[in-house]
Amino acid sequence: MSESSVYGLMAEFDSAQELIAAAHRTHDAGYYKIDAFSPFPIEGLAEAIGFHKNRVPFVVLVGGIIGGLSGYLLQYYVAAITYPTNIGGRPYHSWPSFMIVTFEMTILFAGLSAVFGMLALNGLPMPYHPVFNVPEFKKASENGFFLVVFSTDPKYDDARTREFLKGLAPRLISEVPS
View (cartoon, rainbow, N blue to C red):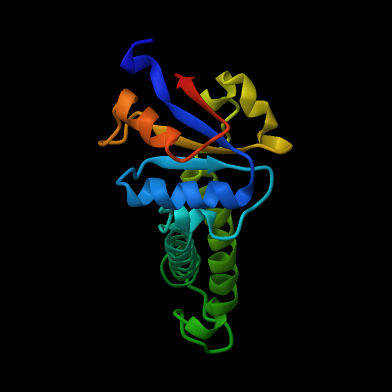
């Protein structure tokens, strides 16, 4: 296979402890575009592969701010500019009466941005992934523990990366076609 048609190299391990140790060694060796797959969540695996960024809170904050501003400005536009009505002698721009809808719009937009931001940042929905091309990967939902080094990693070289992965003592090393 040509290098452009290779998604990466996949190593299969026997246990979660071996996968975590291999992930630490791989990240420490300078491979930063790596991913791990296991049949259940493993404490510390995300840190082992160098996954530290979580942008969902920022997306939720921005969504909440946009929701709050849009709710407040919509009420201000309607009550003070488009259709000003003096009811009970209150001013047209009566901000305390605008707070309930502003709060609700903040919560609504923050919640929706959390859902759609999480889906977008995780690349979901993803009905197909190149690792599905490896026949052994079907064990990932039963008892398989896999570590993938992407071919887009700057340090990736097919021969050297394969030798490095062999040094981690995996059960099997497979090439992942694109």
